[in-house]
Image 1 (cartoon, one colour):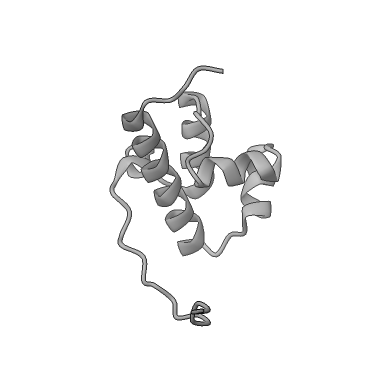
Image 2 (cartoon, helix red, strand yellow):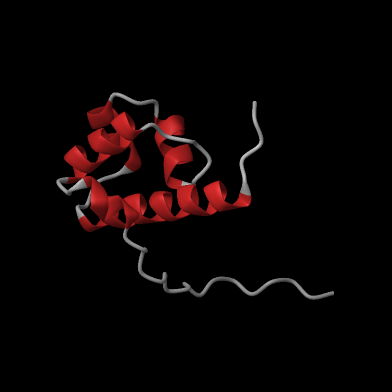
Length: 91
């Protein structure tokens, strides 16, 4: 498998974050979205995490399922709010 360039990794990560943002806005789970795309849930999860180099065809299908133009997948995602959690252990 060919090694991905840092630039490609960044693009895939942004597309994945934007896809997740749009999916959540529509109240869909990863499982529901993967089923509509006829993808395995793990493959769809990889897409959202920027771990999968997707084809233009897949991007078109994702855009259709989310009800947006493909260009929407390339919009920079909004900054995520950091959710407070349990503090890290300090030793």
